[in-house]
Amino acid sequence: MATSTTFPTTEFSKCFECRSIFPSLQQLIGHCRQQHTDMPFVCDLCGRAIKYLRNFKQPQMVHSGEKPHECQDCGKAFAQKNKLRRQERIHAENPFYCRA
Image (tube, rainbow, N blue to C red; front, side):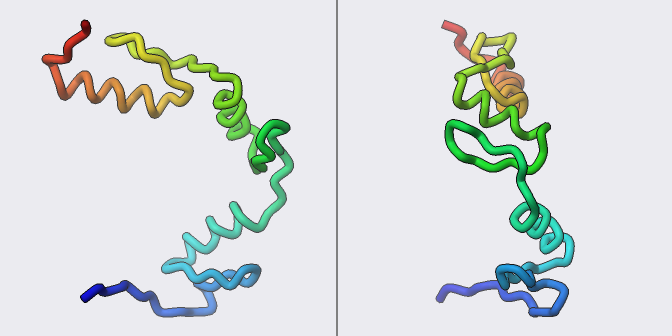
């Protein structure tokens, strides 16, 4: 039998704009900031709207194919630094990695 987790609904956990319910006030605030505020930066290629300029570069790199983060162990390149870090952990956890 499947079970589901339910959260008590309070006035603090319900979005006034879209009526979505969240388990905490912190998650509600994050939702409102992300979903219901102006997003002035719009990608000309895909139409994705971005709130902060610092986050606008990521979709641009996807479209351009730019991959500035390169793994020193295998030479594989990534657009996002966190993906490079994940690759580096693979090498660290597997010292017998075949470089051929």
